[in-house]
Length: 140
Image (cartoon, rainbow, N blue to C red):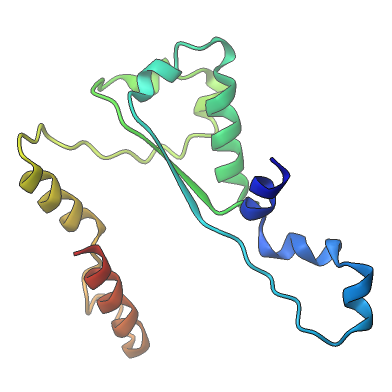
């Protein structure tokens, strides 16, 4: 569990945990963390749990920006946000995407590409164009 928490920790949090041996040596300290995307399928079933503790903790971590995580909830219910407790709803970013019923794998691929790809030329900054192109290539 400690290793999982250290992976999720923000790189700035590592400054406080410098090993005494590393202070004597002039080696660069590596500050790194992993970004994590948590996908909760049938999200509405998590709303039936008492106090919705899991949802509260996940949204709290994502909102605090202490750990680079994103929580994606998938549900077939349109009123799933209304099922959240008040304290959980306050942590929820209220960003949701309605995806119409897709009947084929090719349809899923098209919707995901359209949603995740960045429109090039929107920012106008030349240094961003390369990053946007690499992102779009990675998504496709």
